[in-house]
Image 1 (cartoon, rainbow, N blue to C red):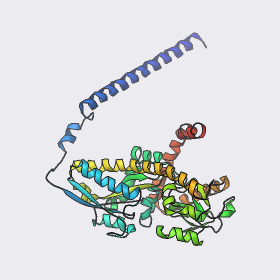
Image 2 (image 1 turned 180 degrees about the vertical axis):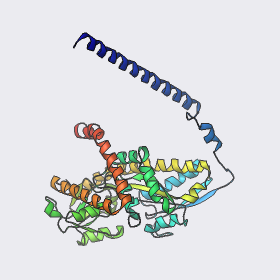
Image 3 (image 1 turned 90 degrees about the horizontal axis):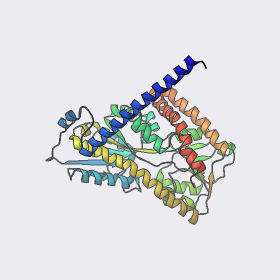
Image 4 (image 1 turned 120 degrees about the horizontal axis):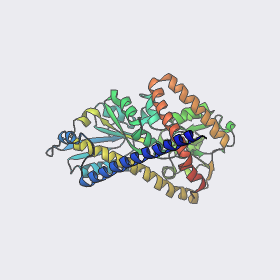
Length: 390
């Protein structure tokens, strides 16, 4: 390198270093300003005064809302969580907002909750987005995508990318606002009375498996069967179906599947992070004072965290019970079966994208975010669990 080029290179390095120092100083100033403002309870936004002026609170009016769920009354975790949410809202509002919970069938059938809240029969509802797939095919993407993101990544897509915006846009014509309010995390792959070794073992296999996972299972050679929750145990015991998925060890244990099925396969490729939503009637929500709107949102955020944490803890406890009390062989799906299902997932998602423009647009966003996350996940969470976690 000649002297001129060498001097130029050194000057470039100095300039770059100077730029880095300036950015670092700016970053530190911003942090210092934010920390001071937070300590004093001051908003850092330029329009904070405008936001304060727009607050509308009426302490003399109470609100009594009905929350319809798709779950049976007091259903473990999901029904429990709805009641906790109602209690939190009542506490945060100082008793100005009371929410009464109604299980599926108490006011309307479970799968009519969407229409009931949309039409104003109730102000709020709770379920999973794939329950409305007949009405909104693209809603399934917000529930569970086979070989999809985990709960942490899905939360990031909804809260940090355009997931929430797409979700709200999809429900807007129905006078509804959807809010993420829970996740099962990774599910189990299901209970089988037949061992799986090759792709051929899927041929003709009758399995209770709904949603997108059911479409993929049928595409892969099996037969997807829809069975009501209360009938699954009897149908599996009598051989009406050969296999069933449900949720995970906690709920599966309560259903008693470990007493009648021989094989318990993992992972839940079909539902890697099944999410739940709370749907708000738009007109009712928009008529609320600003503090109650914020209280509802904060309560649902807390519910989202509580549900996932409850699933994690109780699944761990009950996997141990299943191992101790049942004669169950807990097996991973064979690699050839997983790859077969993965290939057919891509085919199913392409077919559905061709059929429905909303499905295509939302799945493109979902898939792009998943792809964006993969490089970081591979050297963070995945590397940790493969090499260190025990």
